[in-house]
Image (cartoon, rainbow, N blue to C red; front, side, top):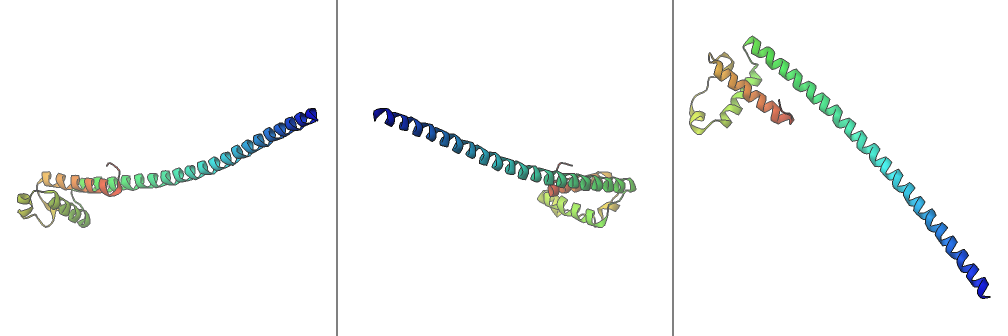
Length: 133
């Protein structure tokens, strides 16, 4: 009888170990599937972000090209000039802000003020898109 109890106990222990191993294996498989799905989701997000980054870089390059063309022509479009003037006024000191600004900065004879305007435009572009220009 004692012999039979020991054999039954050993069988029970072996069965329990097999069951535990099967449970651990199942748990590993579930974790692997979860990690694979997570990895796929992260890779998808990375691809989308890379696409947005590429698109933003293209837009920045296009804007740089347009700005360079405007520089070559010695003029800026009205929207850029207005935005640059507004940004320049906001960043200037109170003394400079009270000084009257020319209505059309692109026609100003001072190349320094035009350069300042272009720098302000670049700064606005940089802050609006989140990338250094």
